[in-house]
Length: 286
Image (cartoon, rainbow, N blue to C red; front, side, top):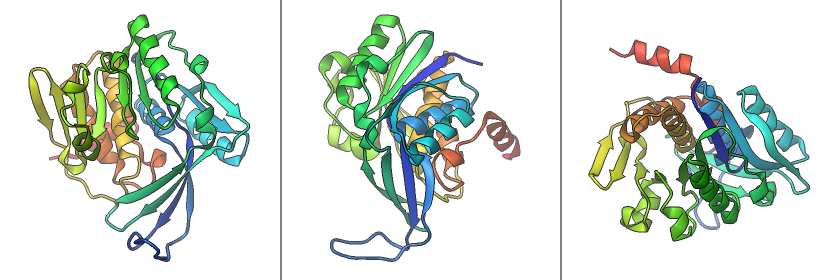
């Protein structure tokens, strides 16, 4: 068992509908049967990390409803410490996800209880790494990052959805994680003031950006079923490796393998591999 990973982020119920194609403006398309699955970028990241055997504490908020029960059951089932989860009066966040036959998805998120996460909910005692995402209030994320710096805890932020963080907070991040579309809009990532950055590129793997240059880490080729939550699987695995003391490029190598394996099964959290599954996959390659 490695270092404790503290995850600050959202917890949602994912309402997943398979569609032949996503609708255009003003258009209605018929989909398949709806599946209700646990999700949310923060909860996904926490489950992905815990499935790999790491001790994980999740900081977030859910409603006192059946969706909140669903999310908490998935977190605790994966071994995540949920004592930092607030039960709010607002409904649990919901993500409406349309998935096409090629595994690509479009997502609309209704934040709900995620907006009720508070700075005082964050506890970093015993932590080796903090990872946060931006589906919770920005002041909470900024508080967590600065608290991590004071405690000597490595801070990682998945800047999704993209939000404005203060220069003081950006200067702590090691790394900032964004996907290729977010990176294109942000421009020169190191110019933001971060210590390092990781750009995820789906089937192409990821780029590690540091002052020494850019290193591309390729992803293994897999048969894609559903890409929902793959970025969160990547971030969770990255945090685990960093908490265990891996160098950034090595941590990204581990993370792209976890993310690649996650897209071979449907859903987000249900698709995340255990360390045993990772070992089996590695042993089965020629």
